[in-house]
Structures are given as structure tokens and as C-alpha cells.
Amino acid sequence: MREILGRRRRTRSALLDAALTCAERWHWPVLPGAGMRTRPSCLGLRRDRDGSCTCLLPECVVPGAHPEDPGLLAATSDPRMVRWWWTNRPDAPIVLATGTAVSAVSLPAVSGRRALRLFDLLGVRVGPVTATPTRLTLLVAPYSMEELGELLHEHDWVPSSLRYHGRGGYVVLPPSEVGAGRVRWERPPPEAPGGGAPWLPTVTAVVDALVEASRLAPDGTRLAY
Image 1 (cartoon, rainbow, N blue to C red):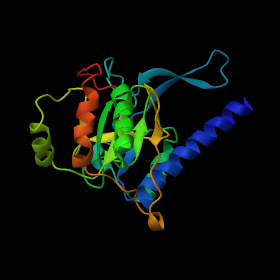
Image 2: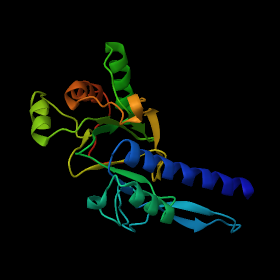
Image 3: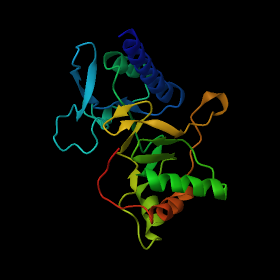
Image 4: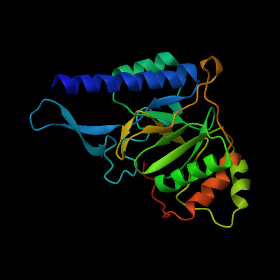
């Protein structure tokens, strides 16, 4: 039991530290996500996640991995608010509100890793990349819907499995645990001079390769973390 409690405390401490890093050092707006429901184990010594979201929607497509209370508009980079949130909800996933300080593009894990190999082969620099067992998310500099529309218009076909997280959107950051599993860094944020926010590529630099890498991967409309 001591080992279980120690692991839980380390996870909670890591979530708070990561949320504070985003808010205080990088000035990224964050808020606590919905999280996963728990139930007592058979021995009553610990609580196991039962795989369902606290929002209680029976068909929640992203269990635990979305804002609930507070809503997305509450996202902030104020470290005092962040510390208060994760002190009261230490297991809450870290939700990053996209569109102001950072945006993102996500795609299925198979095509995402194919895209990363292509970037490495071509010498294209990428920024932070998060991963769950099912999807990869590339963090990029903020972009407008007009800019994105012009880029996608150049392609004859765009996979519906590609998701664009701009203004009004969000992604979940490590080391959160959501319905699909633990969120981790596939490519950790590079150290920035003076400890500032990590460098981010433009969406222009990555979208063509992401579309191409998705051509051979199963397409789909279900957004799954």
C-alpha cells in the first residue's frame, strides 16, 4: 500500500509541476480537465479508474480529456489559479487552451510516427509532440482558420482523421491520464534560452507532410485520445 500511495503522490506532484511550468514559465493558458471516474478496489486499499469520464455522458468520445468545470474560457496562465486548481483536484488532466499562445494538429499514431520519420529524413525541425496509444499531437505556433483554409485548399484530399486545434480548441498535455491511457511526450519540449516557452514550428511547415503521411493510414471521423 505504501508503494501505491507513493506512486500516486508522485503522479499528483508531476501534474501540478507540469501545469505550473506551462502557466508560469511558458505562459500557456491551462485548466483542469474532466478526469476519470474511480471506484474502490476489491480490497478497499486504493481506487481504480473505471474507464468512464466524470461528465457521465455514456458516449463521451474523449473520456477525461476535455474541459468540464470550469469551462474552456477559464483557461489561464496565472500560477496562483493553477496551483489552487491542482491542489483541489490533484489528479486532473492538464488541458491546454489552443489558439493564442500555441495551437496544434493531431492525427492517428500510425500516421503521426510516419510523419515524424519523414520530418527527420528531410531535416524539418518539429517542436513538442505529445502521444497517447491512439494519437499524436504536434504543437505549433498559433494560426488562423483563414491561413489553415488556404493551406488545405491546395490539397485534392484531406483526411478526416487529421484534427486542427486552433482558437476555441484544446489539447491534453503530459503527464495526464485519460480514457485512452497516459499522455506522454513523444518529442519533449526543447529547452528555450532563459527557460522561456519552447520553440514552435508554423503550421505551414508541417501540414503538407501530415496530410501525406495520413494517406496510407486508416481514415476516420471519431476523435479519440
